Image (cartoon, rainbow, N blue to C red; front, side):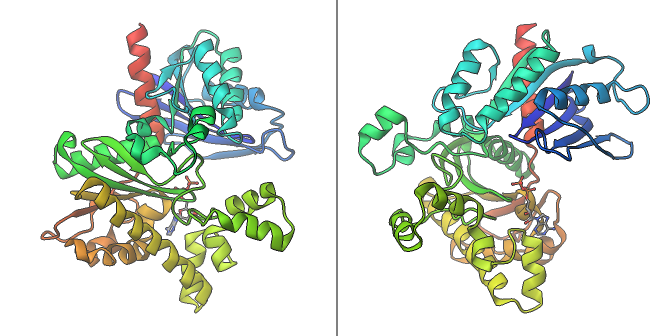
Length: 401
Ligand code: ADP
């Protein structure tokens, strides 16, 4: 079954056409700068050259139309008719408490996604634009919503309640939701498969370290705690996000710098993290290069990042009362060997030993980076959120037929 996976942002749309039998990506790409001038259309068919062209991407519907037209284009298309696309899977950031699993999109599901827009104002409205565009252009093709938050709905109340007046949870549903759920779900399952341990009897900590980063404690295949919260701002020090801070800092900065809370939230989201600490970049490749040239702030930012990851892993071993395996994924987790090395060496007290050679050699591929006699296995497992979306979409749509 060919499934179109769509990940819509406010000004971008990422897509992949995936064959769910072979799990092969038939084509992938990106529509960038939607609704802004200088739009760009990227398309890469399997076994073909990547195409990038300028495009007037007035809105999301124009972008989806361009994706569909390209997929069936006589010259470089990958399918002969749009009827070959059996379903569309949409990545949805926030499903609130309502969605514990992926769902076939209907009017009620759309209404619930809309209701969660307050909790994810930058994401959910954009996802709805993508859904509406697809609905208009492919009215007879079933669509499925796959939520970043759904995997974490198994967290117990003690893990998701904040130490705030309980009425805020009752009135406004203020609680920990967690994100990157499709990634944590995929990587934990794959870790168990890869190591040959039973998922239903396992304690795994997954570290999704990318531009945005989060950690998840997974017991017997179920998320029991995760570092992101009501929004993706909480938890680890990230590329541009602060992660955990003392909440009193907000009022303190507001007074000192004469800024509004909205302005400070923007700083916490976009100008903090390793970018804020280093004053240089949010990209770990830039920080490594600067560190090697003697830039002490770049070195410090990398140390702070690694320290916080190790600290969270330590606390999640307590949440899980032990740990069988720790897995790294996403841009930093899959590639940044020195950062991984720093994190793992901080965890030696758990009986974990790093296999230095394996760590240096495991870049962007699956592998075990702990020694044979390490008490806890440490793995690198490249994540694949699109594949999870395609699999869930196939499963739900197959039940309809
Ligand atoms: P996103 O959260 O946007 O999906 P990714 O998972 O693609 O992000 O991760 C992007 C980050 O991964 C980049 O900001 C960069 O810091 C880091 N990264 C990518 N490749 C490497 C590499 N070879 N070495 C170190 N860091 C890398």
